Length: 112
Image (tube, rainbow, N blue to C red; front, side, top):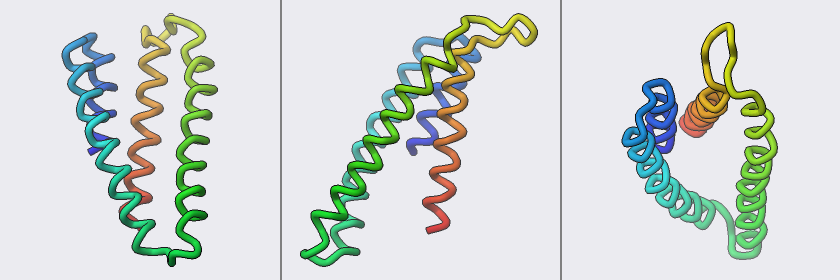
């Protein structure tokens, strides 16, 4: 569901639609909290009590590192406003990159 929200946000930039952007962010935000609960449940079932705190720490650290990388990469992608050859806004490129990464993440989760 996270991927669907991200996909709608990407489409909203192509169509220049603010309501579509808000809908995509709403879906993305609601599914993000559900994913956190699901992640905590899976970690709680897979690890014994002696390793549980370490497992939670690792999952939280990886999550925060992903946020740091996103905050570092996104401004560099959006440094220029418009590609003259394609007419594509760099913000659109950044949002589509996030959608692709979300798709790869969902595909990897399905393989596990």
